[in-house]
Image 1 (cartoon, rainbow, N blue to C red):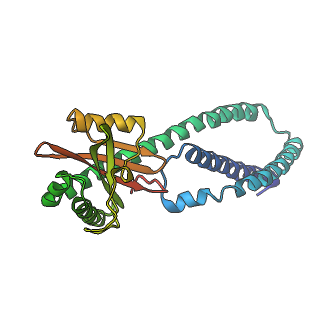
Image 2: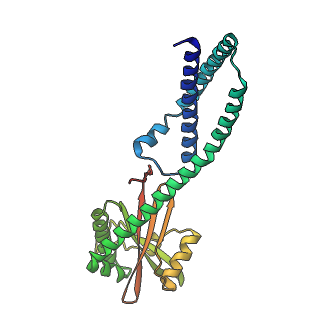
Image 3: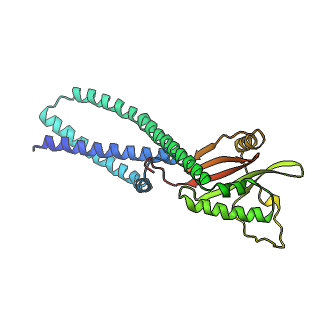
Length: 265
């Protein structure tokens, strides 16, 4: 292998390494800024090491500079024609620039597929839990603000949470009033016991909501909507699952959080 071949080979290896590193940093920035959940945990963790990529880019730039100088020397001694190379370089540059929006689109597509798969899985698991525990679900829907119902609800939700690994957190949302004002209460953990001297108060269970969530809850409780609401944001997945019986309605709130998104989850 002559010097010209060695220079060409080193250029190919160096440029390819730099391009891969640039793509790596671009992907890392995209998934971090936009909270995209696409890759498996081990690959996502590797992204956090990409800060080293800055130093690698600096070293790569130095290596490329030396290699191109070697190329000029080789071309001068071998009287290479550089016209075709310039033309090819321009086409390569255009293709390189266009590759970034394509990669960005693929990342968003992967995040969308992850959310949709998670939604289907959560809804399926919610239906399974409710249908396989009809008696307990009926106890929940028979809401009354007293210690007995609150404690039974805590026990039932604890069972729900342990039944399916997809739901590390489960709570019940109900509609009620305080001083003639409509409110929504959320029940999950309760540390009291029946007969305690400390009586639970409604304002201790008020469920904090966003404007969008309040509109959804009003539609379910006061307009008899049975729509299921699913939301996904930065790895947090929430499912509002209405359940009605005998004219009474509750909402089972299931949530999951995964730091790492993966299509194969």
